[in-house]
Image (cartoon, rainbow, N blue to C red):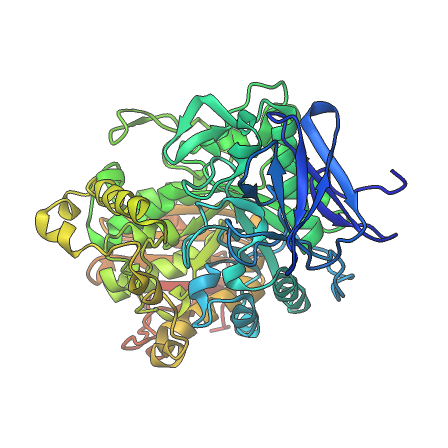
Amino acid sequence: MSFKRRYPIGAEIISKGGVHFRIWAPDHKKATVVLEKKEDPLFYPMTKEKGGYFSVLVPEANKDTLYRFKLDNSERLFSDPASRFQPAGPNGPSCVIDSNYPWTDDSWKGITKSVQIIYEMHIGTFTEEGTFKGAMDQLEELADLGITIIEIMPLNDFPGHYGWGYDGVNLYAPCRLYGHPNHLKGFIDKAHRLNLSVILDVVYNHLGPEDNQLGAFTQKYFNNKYDTDWGMAINFDNPSCREFFLTNAKYWIEEFHFDGLRVDATSCFFSSTPIHILADLTHVVKNAGGERQTLIIGENEPQNSDFLKPIDQGGYGFDALWNDDFHHTAHVRLTGQREAYYTDYLGTPQEFISSLKYGFLYQGQFYDWQKKERGVPNLNIAPESLVIFLENHDQVANSGHGKRLYQLSDHGNYKALTCLLLLSPNTPMLFQGQEFGSSHPFYYFADHSDSINLLVKEGRKESLAQFPRLATREARRALTDPSNPLTFTKCKLDFTEREKNVEIYILHRDLIKLRREDSVFKNLHNIKFDGAVIGRNSFLLRYFGDNEDRLIIINFGADHHFNPAPEPLLVAPRGYEWETLWSSESVIYGGDGIPPINIPYWKVLGHSATVLKTRKKKHE
């Protein structure tokens, strides 16, 4: 060939004219590209290459050409495993996409080590339109709020009219329900102009249960030795299968200018090769950005902090991991529920202090819910490498009725924990609508064939039955049907609630501004901090600057008179005193006002958070 492909698989437009098609189908003796025309389809036999690949250059093909593949003598035609777009869904023809786009982000440097606030988004429910264009119209508002990273839930195409995206089957094709691939590029390009990074949640541990056509090309995509909760595991020990997924990661970052990936369920990646697939994935993500700094975040239920170690030290080189422990102890504190995977948490002040100081709460202790040890010892986890949250897509949906934590808890304590979330040394994440106290639920929704819909509905009930309160006959009858269109549409955000719930919106805005602009809070990754329990329901955090300290006092219980006060962390540096910098009890956040907190004794308001700063004492 007198041209060089960009990627090893898929359809690529050639500068000299035509489209070059390449697939991996080692289970077959021959393959044919079929161009779908209004008149009779056109057939182009492909040349078999080493390793089970087939390829052909088709001069008649161009941008927007629709095509499929014929394998051996099968009458059925199949979409491209590396299709860049499926305009009619997974069972329809694939579409040739021109990779050229008029980007305006040449000066964009990617994700820096400065303060980051993540915002998790589901494109289909983020706006009423449920499209890339609709989401694009809200980017200014997110930038003004102070968000720095948008994390988009999976975009790979899936069957049906709605879904979370974790059952994707066309991993290279942005979901046609959300718009054209160029609309996604436009979204990211605008985000970069607004200094917003964009990362993508990817699912490489399994494929969806319906309309998955990879197995028709070869069963070598799957590893029969292992199983996941969602289907057959991926065969990362096969070099070509491994290449398929690593190329996908590279493709999202190069082709769409994503600033990194959030990798779903990393505990279900099985690899027996000398270099683990996750180490390879990190390497690809870091290199694909070129001069742009990229980020790789993992979801790891066993909470194995070794993922954060450099590859040459036996780790996988991840930048961050989700910290479920923080969420679980916060949920127990706010709701009182200690069922299922909340069993091993008490929501005590010490749990919050330990979480912020040491990261995961479980680092090898026995975990009663799973009847085994959980986590690995590591008391030196960099705080910013753990992503903490009060809400995410899973946890809101797992409340049973899709309710937001704001609706399930005391508002004073919710505001207090929002303060802790946004002013902690960890990396905070918000879930869409959380910033304005959205009253809209977030359910699990999926649209499959009738038979699979029934299985999903029953499976969902069984999954939620781990919570005894959701296992009763009454509760099971009240659970939403994931396949009901109303289950999906009820989840769409209502942005008029920014004004209706203005107090909670301003609270988030002000805390994020404090996090990003305050001389101490914006440098939390470089500042020493400590904490102390000062009551059964109250605790403090102290951040140490150069005589410019910050003190956060949180009280989940009734008004607390801390007298006597045998805790040295309460004492300001010599020659300095404390003054109130922020309080959740401010009238603008729906509180009753902010009385003096330490004149002459410490009086901590109930169900509140107060932030103090040092100032030089006035001469008496």
